[in-house]
Image 1 (tube, one colour):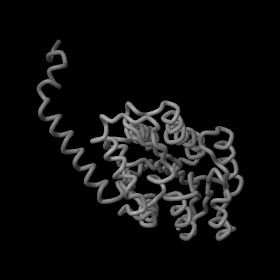
Image 2: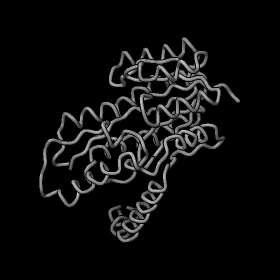
Image 3: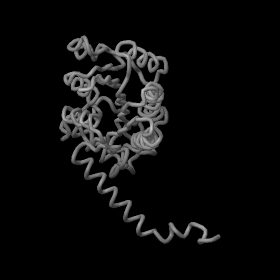
Image 4: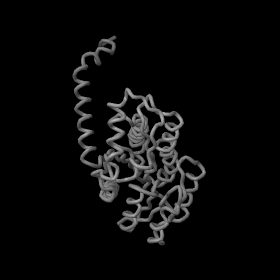
Length: 280
């Protein structure tokens, strides 16, 4: 097995924690990043020769720079970057508080973007590497109560697609992960609620928020199996650009394809008619 070096953000809980444990079990080397390194002490202590704990808040440029430098100082390279750090936020679009939304964008999108640009020079120099961005089925399908969260993940999906086309000839691969409901802390303490409540959204945003909050801890998705799936994608000779995780993600994505095709086909004449006539 090629001894790749992984740098994984957001390893305190959920996907990041399970993925870090899994890659180390497989014999890879890993920089296990978290805002509080005490949260990942047990993982690193179990693999003293192949793991290091890295203090990392992805909204802090100095910590991003230091995390990359520490990883390279210890292991000499970074082969796989997993941008996993992220938070959620519940509120109808009209209810959502701008400071909370901006904070979420700083973590979910800008933190991911800055981590990516910090690692890309190393990967370009080697003409190899793999960037794995943890998005969501909410990066392909919009849902009530999480419109701005969806916006962060749609942004991650779009950035990832463009990046993949920019770096393919450099030997750098990109995979964006789109999970549905998994038994992580995302729908628990990791997601704040808007303090603004508008009763008109009780049958849409509020209903969906209650449903998501209500099944926190009972979601069908297994983070351990998700970690194995992510590693399988990275190890593949032909990894996907998008990897859906969970039956609900597959169902949601296929429903979105049907909706897109219906609108595209129904409005085809109008769409084509917006161009100048041929020859003009």
